[in-house]
Image (cartoon, rainbow, N blue to C red; front, side, top):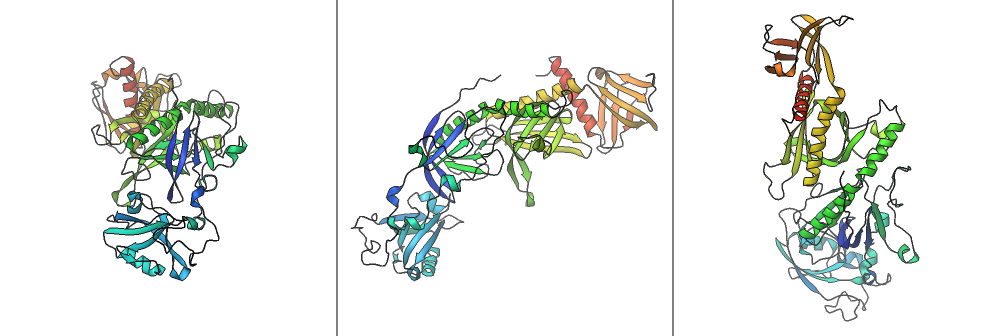
Length: 503
């Protein structure tokens, strides 16, 4: 059993909220991540400020009245696509300056780190915009060329025009958690805490880490390698955080990932409790392993992307869910279910075949079904995740072989109805159908070590050769042969591992 050293951490991060970055103080504890918006009282002026009056500071380049900051010159290099990456409001017809109302994350203006919402654009490449209409300002920005020099001035009085995002009101999150005696943890529900009068006035969001999914470069491009994505347990919401640099992002990711992983035993206990309560002890599934990862999906045009999914392993099956199955009802409707006994791990490691820096860590599975082989590729975030899932899948398939022990299928051999049985210990048995109640209808019986060759046509026929006088036997399974082939592989792999011939 793993022994976890949980991380406590705090610092300043940027939070993407309503398409803009806001500075927050982040505090990581054993079970929660608390985000608190930094106070920006100095950014708010009088709601009654006038921009057309003689006393307005907009027409001044020096900001003598102190209500606005000094004029700044900012050079921005446009990207190949996306332009400057800003939205503007105002114009002469609105009796307002040309104001930056939105800065789009990751685009040129955002990357310059020199512009902010509330900046008034005084000129573009020397062309004065102080008396420009909105349309003239738009055209001036579009025709400015690849390199743009903006003369800007931050107007504190305009802040009321751009309501500051609220963590409480504008940050959606799944705060609903199951309540049961076995589900211990903090009393936070995803809402701000009000433990004292001093904290009640703060714009704060407390996020429970239990069954969250921390990832990087999954749903949002991260060219600077400093973003974190925290996905909610219901799979509906994502918090994007930006760190000051790559090493800081790595440190925060490791700390959050460690604390989430340490909470997994609580989730296992909760799900197993409701599974046991809703069925008899002899029939209910027992959850062995659960967690978030990313499944590769095919898009139109041959493109690929990853989507977050929850994978659960019981003693017999692999299940995928869109969100954490907190209840028996949600457990009963997985995206898919595959038997472990008919599933094979075929790859585990770097997606590019070498452990290159920045390459995805993936594992691939193949499952034998009546329709053929079904393949899946899953991306994980850390080497610990990769080894955990690899070990759980391989050991799970071997344990399923020892638990199930026997698989049989009705088929045809030499135009005769027979039943082919694969037994984990005894090997192959072919009996006549319908079977003799006394059990004396055995046609052939061979241990695994007698098998010389096995093959299939991928349609309905299974070929087995034990070197006996009957020669190669052709079994018409009346359906796809892949499930039987994969079960045979699992039985052999489990036996060889038990004998110490495989590790």
